[in-house]
Amino acid sequence: MMSSVNDGLILAARLLLAALFLIFGWRKLRDYSGTVHQLVQLGAPMPVLAAALAIVMELPVAFAVAVGAFARVATLLLVLYTFGTALIGHRYWTLTGADRVDSMDGFYKNVSIIGGFLLLYVTGAGKYSIDEFLISR
Image 1 (cartoon, one colour):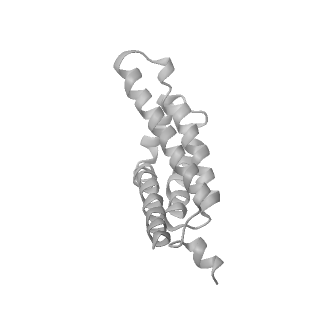
Image 2 (cartoon, helix red, strand yellow):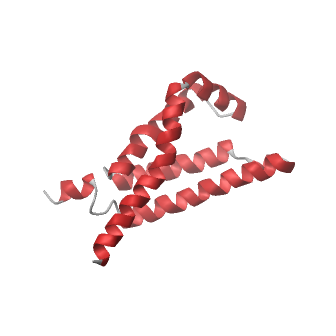
């Protein structure tokens, strides 16, 4: 009984972790030029390439996490990506006042998301996943 509860919770965790990336990845894809502009404003290196990379990470890689396909690899990719976005997009240590607080919130939310991905890496995709389906064949 407990195993099925755990597998259900792992599925929920995968879906919840991926949802953020899928929603914002879709927005980035629909407004690619706006995404590039935002990355220019943030001082991201190679903003055109960075926008394309963001879309790849936030759509197919996050989708892989959601469905549990190559989940451990996809999870590690999103750990690195989320850490990179924290460093590029939430440099609170360079800001003051309310901007600093807002950016600090974003940075530590990213750190928390990384924690969720690391836990998912340890548990694996669970029973309700493509990974499990492929292993059990």
